[in-house]
Image 1 (cartoon, rainbow, N blue to C red):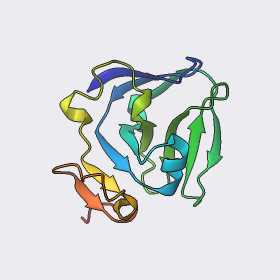
Image 2: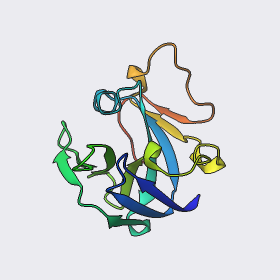
Image 3: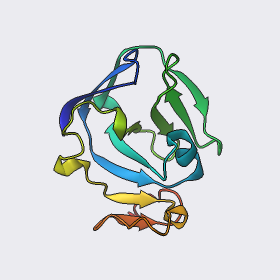
Image 4: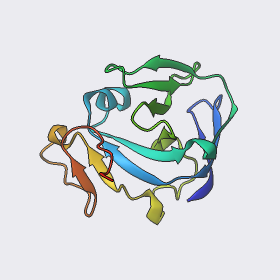
Length: 141
């Protein structure tokens, strides 16, 4: 999945995405509250493939202090997050990615889920996705 754009609800913020390396589902309390849903779908973008082309997003530290969340100053849509555990990537809310086919592409299928211990019992795990009960754990070298 390459050469995509991501925009907020009002269109004030516009991001060019040269590459999406993977997607994931997050079931943490913060993502639930920010999305108003049972989980957030997040696309991992290498920092060099992320280009803010328009807008001046505001930001705030995450509740745990492990990262920064960026959102549109006008419509307040959460756009992306940055985390200390992976400074080489931006984590874009997948719903911000433009195009009706965005979720139909093979690369859009989540490869892992985090905070699965908080996943609702009625929601099934994504087939083939790595399951992490807590937050993201870097692969062991």
